[in-house]
Image 1 (cartoon, rainbow, N blue to C red):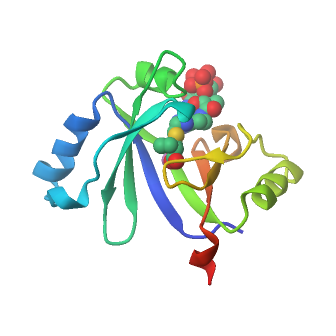
Image 2 (cartoon, protein in one colour):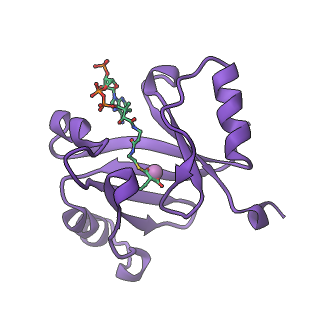
Length: 141
Ligand SMILES: CC[C@@H](C(=O)O)C(=O)SCCNC(=O)CCNC(=O)[C@H](O)C(C)(C)COP(=O)(O)OP(=O)(O)OC[C@H]1O[C@@H](n2cnc3c(N)ncnc32)[C@H](O)[C@@H]1OP(=O)(O)O
Ligand SMILES: [Co+2]
C-alpha cells in the first residue's frame, strides 16, 4: 500500500518565476524555498517549496529529451504534472504494480530526494501521473 503524500509535481516554463509566485502571492518565506538544482538523468531542473505537511516540487525541462517537454507544449503556462507517494521498498512496489496490470514507465532510478523512484502511467490512475518514491530505511524506524 502507498504511504504518505510526499510531493505534488508542478511543471513550469521557469522555476524562478514560479518561486516568485509562491513567495509573493502565497507568502511562503524565501528560506522555505530551496535552490534550483539540475538532475540530468531525469531531464529536469527542480526546486522544492517546503510546506508544513508536504512539498511542492517545481520542475522545468532540462534538455531536448526532457520527459516534460510534451506536457509543457500542451500546457505552456505550466500545470499540475504528478503526485508522489512514499513506499517502503521501490522494487516491491514496482513488482506489485506490474502484477496488478499497471504500466510502470521506468526502472527504479535516483530522484531529487536521493532515493529511487518509479512512475506509473496516468492511464492507470484516473489521468494522474503517479510517482512512487522509496523512503530512506531510517524513516520507517
Ligand atoms: C525531480 C525529479 C523527480 C523526482 O524526484 O520527483 C521527478 O519528479 S521527474 C518528473 C518528470 N519525469 C517524468 O515525468 C517521468 C515519467 N514520465 C513519462 O514517462 C512521460 O512524461 C509520460 C507520462 C509517459 C508522457 O510521455 P509523453 O511523451 O509526454 O507522452 P504524450 O504527450 O504522448 O502523452 C501520452 C498521454 O498521457 C497524457 N499525459 C502526459 N503527461 C501527463 C501527465 N503528467 N499527467 C496526466 N496525463 C499526462 C497525455 O495527455 C496523453 O494523453 P492522451 O492524449 O489522452 O493519449
Ligand atoms: Co517528483
